[in-house]
Amino acid sequence: MLREHENLYCDLSAFSGCNALTRDPDYGYRFIEEFSDRLLYAVDLCTPDDRQPRMLASFLDASYESGCISERDYTLICRGNAIRVLNLEDLSE
Image (cartoon, rainbow, N blue to C red; front, side):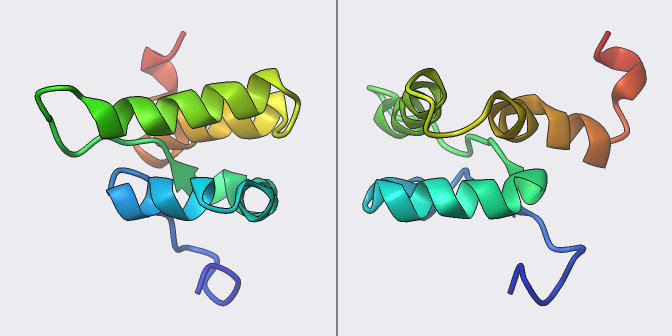
């Protein structure tokens, strides 16, 4: 769907988003590279151990630190896309 609809964005808040990226990391890295300008880091649940939010953050951090995803892609997913989509440029300085 992302290839067909240029105005479609994905948030990665659901466990399924994290699972889709992490169950096959090589596919996840390619997906991130292709769609990094339309992926948004998000957390939509609180758990007693906060396991899922840490899983996604840890995966993104480790992927960036190991060079599997670029700094550009990491920054877009973690903050850049949200800043752009929500028109928060003035607040991000």
